[in-house]
Image 1: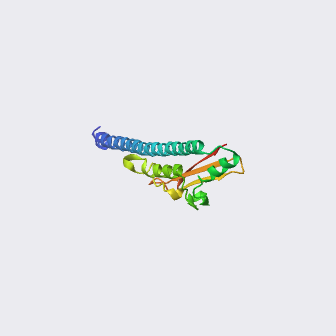
Image 2: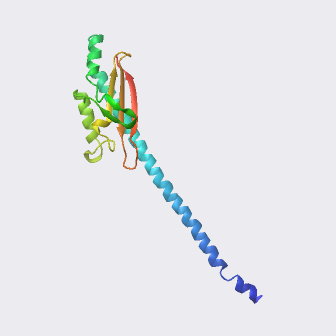
Image 3: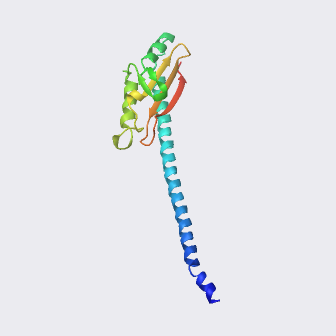
Length: 165
């Protein structure tokens, strides 16, 4: 009997070490899940801000259009165009910037409407936003809003299509 006690003298310590290892792995997994959930919440917040910003611009356009006749509707809609060429997939737009007050105010709001006067969406610049108007297709307005969070490798994009008549 004395020989068996000697062989088993360390089993309790080994079981305790394995228990601590499993507990530590569980805690690390919970920390990783928490970090992933914080990133998901931040992404959801950015998407909500993008939806609100594009809806705000559509509302501004809707109320600012001159509805005297069909031609004035189309002409006033064309003044809202912003950066109408470039590579939409990369959010790298070019072309003439809009000079309409509603659009310039909206772009300013994107750059200063966030926390402490910072950008509403991280990494969003006026060159990453596009407003296209197609008067040949029922006055279709396409607004593309892009931003890039610090941990994103490529820009994120939200596109809204509306018809203003």
